[in-house]
Image 1 (cartoon, rainbow, N blue to C red):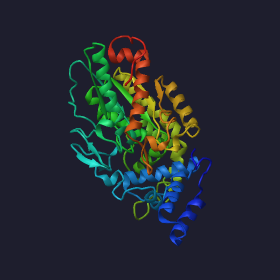
Image 2 (cartoon, rainbow, N blue to C red):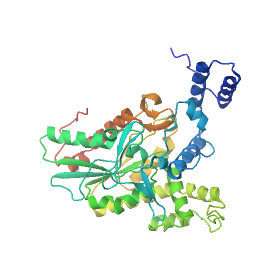
Image 3 (cartoon, rainbow, N blue to C red):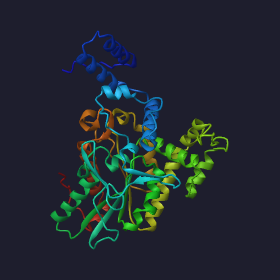
Image 4 (cartoon, rainbow, N blue to C red):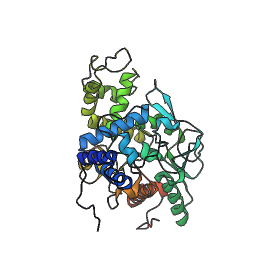
Length: 399
């Protein structure tokens, strides 16, 4: 029996625990354990959770401090966060391109240890194995467009779900005697918004002659989109794509909303972001519509997946509204969608997250995502035929 069943520490309980520790009333080991439990168990409402996530990603992109609603550094330290656990920007794996629509990307030819795991990028700046631009004969290429989970933040190179998928597709083709090699090209970059993922296809991935595109969506996309478009407006970067310009115009953002102060920051920052946030679902619809049109022009299928964070913020109930929107958008553009957000439902978050202070999926979490994606791809008869050039023999055995 779990002695903590039914116990839900509150912020007041967490503060009291810290006070008792500082006063010496609680022994240190007991106080630290209680404080860790309290810090980990604080459940914010959905709006606050997303505001906290926004603060995390603002720091992830720009190295900024956490904003209101995020866990404090003290809370994270009590949960065991090491001093060397760096944000994305501080990890020196990305390079800024601030006057460009993409804003930043990954350095090419990286090889370093990050949080105890190997983090490498290839010559093309992809967190992936090396590939030639020209597609080899008898090769089926899948392009993955995504953000930090898809990139594999916090896990080793070979533990990312896209590398697991590539290995399994090749194994399955060999088992069936199919003369076809598979390459899954990972163009995901941490903190990339849907608009940046879209731009990546034409700007970078199309040159690799893909045969299929997988577009990954998460419950945090609203915050990533808000940050990306806000930064474009802040830095006066060309919005580039007609649908982006149209959505900004539809948001009724005025010159006053984006007026800058003497430090080149928004005078009315929250007003501008709020107007962008209201347009999130129409922009998401436009992004997928543009992606679908581009894929049709290349005569290749587009697949949409929805993947979860490992923490409670994406638990059952918290994700229902977002998933209903995503399913409607996918149907609107006749795009197959695999809902993988239940991948972690059977597990405690400690089993699938990188760490108590970081809800990116760990290696086990990536394996769960891979299994769900492989199952979806092979159970869809049209996609199976496209990938393997033959009909499925029935139930496909996954490892």
